[in-house]
Image (tube, rainbow, N blue to C red):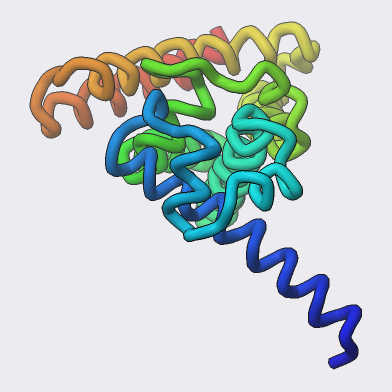
Length: 199
């Protein structure tokens, strides 16, 4: 490996270290505790070095939001690939969304602005757009006999999102019902929306 490649790899490792440190701080103390100074202290760098990689805290938050959307898109693709029928794919993707939210609570809160401010540019992240499109395409497959317009599939997507994100948010911000009840509500909501799709 040449010196140019070594320098580039070193820069990428530093960038990853900064993002990992930011997530550690958030996991320990919450998003409100995150600052460039704390990140620098955590990885034993000076603050100016952090600014060489990110202009400000918002730049770090945006990159973490992108990382979360990459992970969520991966989960959607796995859920879709594991099922043959579009209805089952749709159900599996929303369950994967639910599971991701609770397995990655700080990241989910950042991505969707639960109990924190989400990044202003988050909706333009290509992976977020791709995840939404994958779900909308699957909704269109379920509705194929009705030849749905993009407006209709978008409306159905936001019906799913509103209900499932709302249930997640209730449980993340203040403890909701017990897990068995949550699972029942989640599945009943998903099945109810899927059933209504072709009505």
